[in-house]
Amino acid sequence: MASVETLFHPCLRVGVADAAGWPVHDIASHSEQKELVMDLGIVGLGKMGGNMRERLRAAGHTVVGYDQNQEISDATSLGDMVDQLTGETKVVWLMVPISALGGVVHDLSELLGDGDLVIDGGNTRWSEDQPRADLLGEKGIHFLDCGVSGGVWGKDLGYALMVGGDADDVATAQPIFDALKPEGDHGFVHAGKHGAGHFAKMVHNGIEYAIMQSYAEGWELLTASEEVTGKVPDIFASWQEGTVIRSWLLDLLVNALQQDDDLSEIKGYADDSGEGRWTIEAAIDHAVPVPAISAALFARFVSRQEDSPAMKMIAAMRNQFGGHAVLPESAN
Image (tube, rainbow, N blue to C red):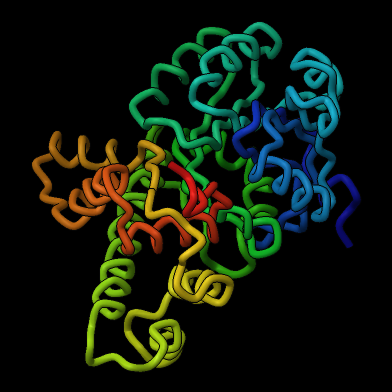
C-alpha cells in the first residue's frame, strides 16, 4: 500500500483576484494518480469566483479567498491572502475585471516569489497573456491563462477550462483544474502556449453569440407567423429531445420562457462583453471569414437602437447562463 507521502501533492497555496470569477482549491484525480489536495488562494469572489471557492472546498482543497467586499473575503488584503498561503509553492487564481487585472498582477509580482504560480481565469484578451507572463517571469513567478466557461451553473455542474502556458505549470495546477472541471473525460484542455487558453475561450464565446442569435431569430419568426397558432414556447420545448439543434442553451431558453412566456418583462437590449469583438478582430487578422459571428455581434448593436423581440431572447439567455443583468421593459 502506498505511503501517505505518495498519495498527496506537496502543499500548494493559490491566490485569487478581484470580483470577476476565480478557481480555488480542489481534490482531483489525474491519470492514474491518487486524489491530490492543495491549498490555494482566490482573488475575486464574484458570481463565478465565489462559486469556484465553494466547489474547490467541497473537493477538499483549502482556499483563501480575497475580495474588496470584506463581507465575503477570507483576507483583509492581497498581502494578507499571500501571507496565509503556507505551501512551498504559492498558487494564486485571478478572477478579476479586466480593468483591475493589471494592478492586481503588479501587486502580486511584489508579493510572490520564485517558483510561485499565477493563473488568470478572467475573460482577458489573449494578446495580453504573453506580456504578463514575461513580466512575472522576470521575478521567477510562473503564469497560466485559463478560459473558464460555466457561468452561475458551474458550482454544481463544473466549469469547462481552456488553459494556455507551459506543461510543467499545468501539471502543478492539475489538481485545481480536476476539481473545477465537470466529472468525466471532457471539460478540460491544455490548448497551447501562453494566450491559447484565452484565445480558445474567445472563440467559444464568439460561437455562443452565433448560436444564441439563431435561436433568437427563430423565436421572432415563429411569433410573427400566422401559421403558428400554438404556443411558441411549446415549440422550443419540443426541440429539447430528438432534434439536431438541442443544446444546453436551448434548455436555458426554455427555462426563461417558463418564467416569462412572451418575454414581455424584458427589454430587447443585449450587451456584449467584448469577446465577440475580439473574435472578429482575430478573424480579420487571420483572414478567416466569420459571417455568422459578425452578424450576431452587429445584431446586438441594433438592440441598443430599438426594442427587438430577438434581443429579448438574447437577453433572457444571457441571464440564464451567466446571471447577466436584464433591463425591465419599463426601462428607458
